[in-house]
Image 1: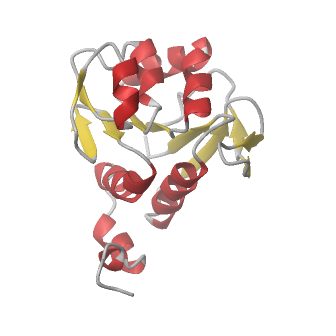
Image 2: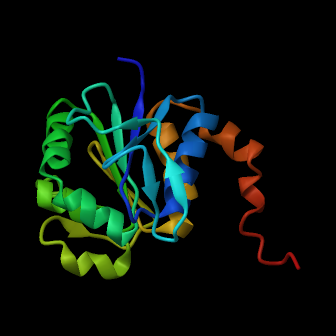
Length: 187
């Protein structure tokens, strides 16, 4: 199966994470679909309305990677969706990549996908998760599970996802002048 990524968009999602991840993956020429959990229009955590490419229909079988952006409202909505959690478990069983950033690992916890895994998330969210081992790292890869901490780590997370799917993230980084992103000496 050719790489194909679903980014799940739920009301209350972190818009910056959602769009940064979609942007990086598409620049890396990896097909990426924004999938609305509740519909084609999603209102993010900061009242920015996103239009999705598709609506979740109960299946994620077409995707080799499923990404859950953070934002507490979006993460809570994903955690509450039994159909989404079942689809995530099904994809995990078939060896798909499962990725989550910020507060979204709370959904993975409820799905049982953090059992025996190292993961990271938004630091204050870690206390809401009852399984797995939280580590204070920007991006954590454990098997086919990938996690990251929050809005400021979305670029590192996106580049890592692209690499895991076989893209040359260094080319994308260069085109996006990522090397200049953290030059504290610029005034």
